[in-house]
Image (tube, rainbow, N blue to C red):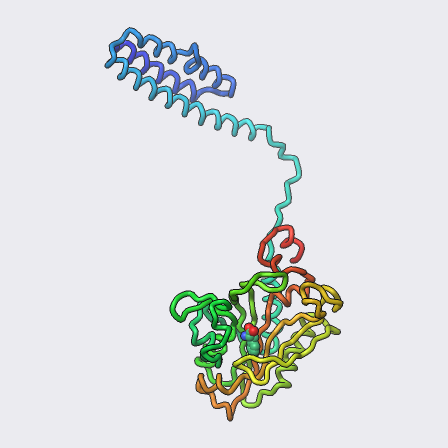
Length: 339
Ligand code: PHE
């Protein structure tokens, strides 16, 4: 048996060296066949095991199998080395022109969000933000929502736990900022909002809003109109039709919604504008004295307006996107079309 073990030892030293020295894939393959092949040296040694006792067979067999695995591994890595070397040596044509890399770019929603922010910044608005997970107080109570208001229903609002919820609008940031500052306050607050709603061509359960609010000693409804009209002119360009519709929000009085002529159908009526020819982009109004009271502002001395704009809607109108879902699906064929 010792003779066999010695032979295995010799075979190992020799083969390990030969593998390292093999200069081509062909030599390496010949080497492999010569040792591990059906008629190879290691195979021949294993054949000689038949004359040994069971115990001896186990010892020598185990040793031989170890050696087999070791040599196989070495051959595989040497083969990889040789293949790499041969491609460096000429398989790659380094004179071919390179393949151009496609650059990534910002998502349409981010682009539009930045455009909106930029326009309001130029009108003197500061930027603030608030948490996506809000408390009932900031999202509803402080904004004068009565306890039984339908928006508080679980069918409309995603509750997290206790009185925590995913904010349904960015208006809670008004309250947070009013608590921190004294008028004049002139702020926009961009961010994500969440609503427990069915998804369709014009509405999604997650979307972005830009909240804006301005409080000072004599802010009037015509200031609100001036700011919104300046925005629409800057963002959509001259000649875009907009209209105010009387509306209701618990935290503004009076309230108005702003519609833009539906660009997708040119006002003729389509799925996105629900065949009305107009698409609502924002809610707005004069801040209700009840809100001022909750934050300790004197509504006899100060007044203010607020608005909340839907970013996806605005993007859809501006870039003629006919389904809001395209803005969330991240289909690269869509994303690449609009930079
Ligand atoms: N928060 C309202 C909404 O999401 C929009 C709004 C903001 C209305 C500010 C009035 C004032 O629908």
